[in-house]
Image (cartoon, rainbow, N blue to C red; front, side):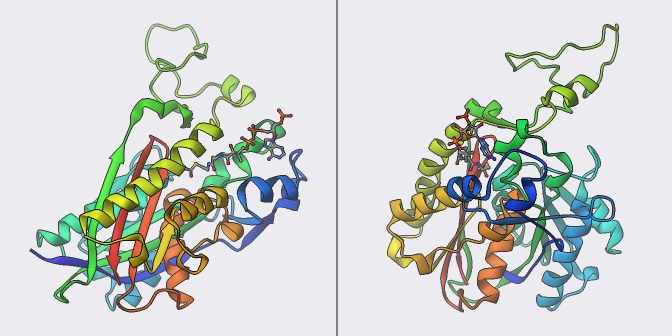
Length: 348
Ligand code: ACO
């Protein structure tokens, strides 16, 4: 049985900065409202046509691969987490493989939203442990800016999200006690509709109280109708208060689960890197766990919520800033749509 370690890490954020003030050009909002509720000051938006979820993932992957002392040729499996893929299908993993000139290795896309990266890391960890692969590229990337409602109608959701990508290369390690100690994954579909983008999709509105009016025809249908773009049902929906209430319970719960499994305590954590959902959620979790400021890393102020990319971007920034050192106990934790949530404990 092997243990896996993060051998290389990188991130990429687009150069276009949109401050809260910039958003007031499109919707009725204010810097004060956004900062008070979410902690966000600005976010990055990808170039509308030139940058995609895949291209941003590639930029992050290049850095991670180089830092791991490997080449794209050495990668023997790809896991790509995103909720904003370039295509409805196929996934971003195969596009990355093609564009980076990789070998015909397996490529898996993960659809687990904000906890997508933690899920992806956990899967990669299992493949390394069994000895099946030796250089797994794990990517989290999002281009949210393409599918947000920038009118006042969509403001409660749109102001929160930003674009970016993060990536790691996972390799086996023989260093005793180093690397990923354990991962913990959970889901509860009871509130699946509380944080979701219903269309385009094949549900036909089956699970929804507000069903769409489809064109009358015998066969087929439409994944999305023009009316949905008009009335806003084609954009992401969030019941913010339900998300908040669940997140502040499930984050600490899964972190405690990870610590207990490894006979560790909250005081053993050197750095908590939570999914950057909302600064208020992070602060609530920090308080519940009793962690001091220097043991929690937040960068949502500058990037907004980048969903599957948020954990690897934050982890990379924390490491680059010297806030994570050799031998540190690092805890990654995420919660998001599904609801799905998870944690990973890493001895750096
Ligand atoms: N600017 C100005 N006013 C706004 C905005 C905005 N961007 N958005 C909503 N408002 C208004 C509403 O229209 C409403 O006005 P009204 O009282 O006149 O009707 C008022 O502000 C309050 O709206 P609520 O939706 O009740 O706002 P709430 O106080 O719940 O805050 C928020 C919304 C910030 C989303 C909050 O519910 C929250 O923090 N939820 C957690 C969800 C979250 O962080 N999700 C992150 C993504 S999911 C994830 O990563 C897990």
